[in-house]
Length: 548
Ligand code: HEM
Image 1: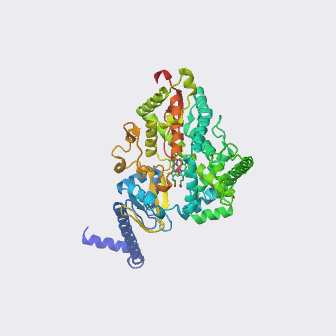
Image 2: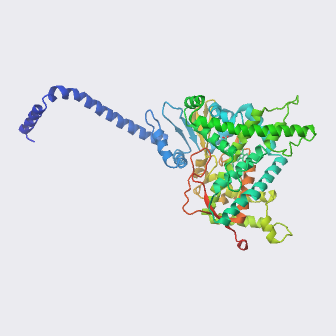
């Protein structure tokens, strides 16, 4: 453009917009500059935040911290997202939430750190008051949320009980009853009708009934023909879900909702009333039975001498008074039901799904089962043995390959995918991570099962053989295979859970081929327990015994 033309244009501009030259233009200029400045600052902050991805694993934004990445992770598969971040950070990273929340925590999948927090420095990493206060209405002073002496006393008493011969006998007999009188008939009905069933739902019912028999000495009957809804089971389920909502609600908000009796707090209050009514009724009856048996000089607790409730009801102090109040007995039982009800069932559901994709593994399990059946020195004719076959405890114990296959399923799909602790004094992890007093620590069991650094290049493959040496099952360090926790708070029900899972799996597999319905979607649900989000729809086909 020529100088003249340029001058003309400038002149025209000032004629058309007389005020621009002096007034408005003058006023807008600083605003334009402010905008530019803001833009420059934003670009700088964005680059800085994104650069932090390199140093901290995730971009960290002003005010909201790493929340945007978390929300994106939640939209896909949260556990896989955590696994990816942890793998890129060498096993540990610090999550920084929005400045106005308490969403700051250290997430780890490093076995050295796990050993440090679960065993070496156990005292520095309790469950903590935050967890206890949040779950108190449901769990009271029970083992799951307790620390220090309250935890120690229950752990000791329950541990003695879990290792007693009577308890083992109770677990074995309750399982025979549930699997042979209830589970197999339900499966047989579905097979005969050619119906598909949700195997996860059936297994959840099995373990709920079973853990109630162990804890309370009563059978609620969830696993019955027609799969009925049982009020106590419904109340327990609702109370657990409403309690979990508290973990994602600011404390002041759920407390206010509880005081007002609204929203999920209303559901919680109502369902707790159902749980308590059932629990206190069983406690009252059991006390009468125990008193009656004492009066008769029996002490047998009405023939249910080895369930937890009877054992704890009978405990006396030096002066002969009951050690535990009714409220405490209720807490003990509710905690055991919570700990034992869904864990083994969801593990079994994932196991059956994995078998569907790994026919070679299924074939080896069947070989093992049939070898055990063949080894029975039984004089009965073969047909009768097949119909009546009930596995004996020592046979279940000999199922090493099945034990390995279940452990391998738990490695890839741990029933408790993440767990947490709170640090009560300043600490440093073996990998150098500094933990200030009050920091929340999350240990990611799901991610640990998928770390090449822990399990090697084939860590994502389902390979039960990695658990076997010369055909015998070899356990792994509890800080590497963390599905059952480790250290002093190692799962109390671990042996029972393996027995339960092996007995149920062998009894089903011996009789049926379990085919996952084609196209059935499979994904984990975001919850404290690793449920299959859409259940596990299967069809059953009777095994052709002549081919076994
Ligand atoms: C596959 C099955 C199971 C798995 C994967 C499993 C896993 C776990 C885990 C990860 C913990 C630690 C939880 C925490 O402290 O936050 C735990 C604790 C516990 N589990 Fe299990 N569990 C299973 C079955 C059972 C069963 C069947 C029972 C009882 C009948 C049971 C009873 C307990 C108890 C009482 C605790 C608390 C121990 C303590 O705090 O001292 N578990 N379990």
